[in-house]
Length: 373
Image 1 (cartoon, helix red, strand yellow):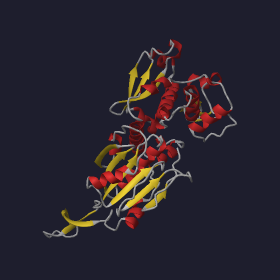
Image 2 (tube, helix red, strand yellow):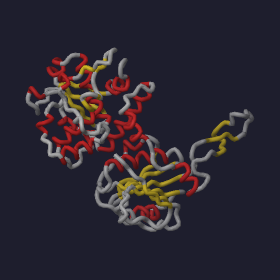
Image 3 (cartoon, one colour):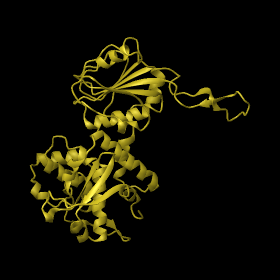
Image 4 (tube, helix red, strand yellow):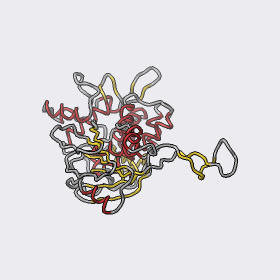
């Protein structure tokens, strides 16, 4: 909390649980993180492992665990080889031997590292600022053996014990980061800055877009008797409300073709839209998956059931049939789908793919949004 308040504030929101970790040989038992139902982050640790560490070494191990959480490593593996992915994630977390990202720094700048510094490092001739996926690809391309990188600090098998969806896990991480940032008064590790930016920054400029394509009533001020006029105390004088008075439907493509980074960005965009108008979320893949009013921060509660095929023509018909057409309809999709004419409704389609072979709708406002992860 004194030296690195960002890590300190995250660590006090983690449940630290002593555990025998019987799935590992005794000499390999250490600690590992997972996210359980309810959004609680837990760290299981083998007490004899902790007892063998000095306080400074334990400092570095805890930083290592928190970095895995902040970087969402446990939900980014996809169909990759588990052992290579473990090595790549440790490279991202630990950095290079001559410029480590973890470890206790004393007043003279000396760094104390766990395992006497004999841990997994980014090779000296590799770029130190690549994504974990890029390190994985390099390991795969150069056909490096995992036995060449055997000094793992922690246990990654706990990642598979997480009980929440990938999107719920991302929201848990985002909440942890936001709280730690607020309480750390700007004292953040340099390499964490880009992660925070990626988790919280919308790509589309919704304020201008909604005003141009929907009308001035979206996201503007309005006069209402429900608000007191701060300039006049006279009874019966209308005050000003900044609450949005426009309404919109956001149709979210949750099919299997939509990857984790795209879903994360979809919900970041939804948060931004919700500041400008009242919105309802319609989830769809090859069929209806849910419809509800959205309030800021709700996306961690949205059940992403199904993840089947893609039919983005059907939700437009569903809105018509149920008489739920709003001031604007916004579709978030990867573009691998069929579309249906919006039939004289205000319509914005945001497509994440840059594939020139992908068909785009020929009506309404169409935006291609490049998502990186």
